[in-house]
Length: 160
Image (tube, rainbow, N blue to C red; front, top):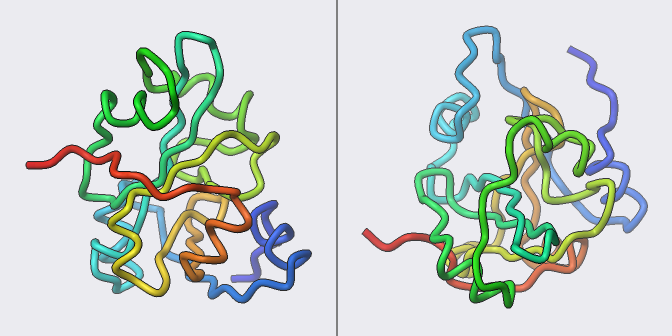
């Protein structure tokens, strides 16, 4: 299955960063993070999802958190310096990021939005994020992800 390069991959190539592409079959419609982790044979703790939020100022913020975790909107708002954040409506994701739900990569969006990686990623040398297309994931070092997305580490997930 030959896959074209996504914006995320082109951006990593341009910065000469090493990454590993993993593809999975999505014919069954199972594109949630936990299903994807199983399909690519990775522990759910190292597979991260990309969530896009909007603040009261209408600014957008990107959060990269473990697939099994939930974004804590209060912690996220504090990290972003906003009073309150809401999830960006699914219908608006492509308009603002250039990606679709289920294929939204924290790398290579239409604009560089303030990006926060949950601090749990610090436990791993590399994590897996969307490659920018449903059916495609990329694994890269946490340091490279921070660099390319100009991201900061922050505790933004809900604690159980």
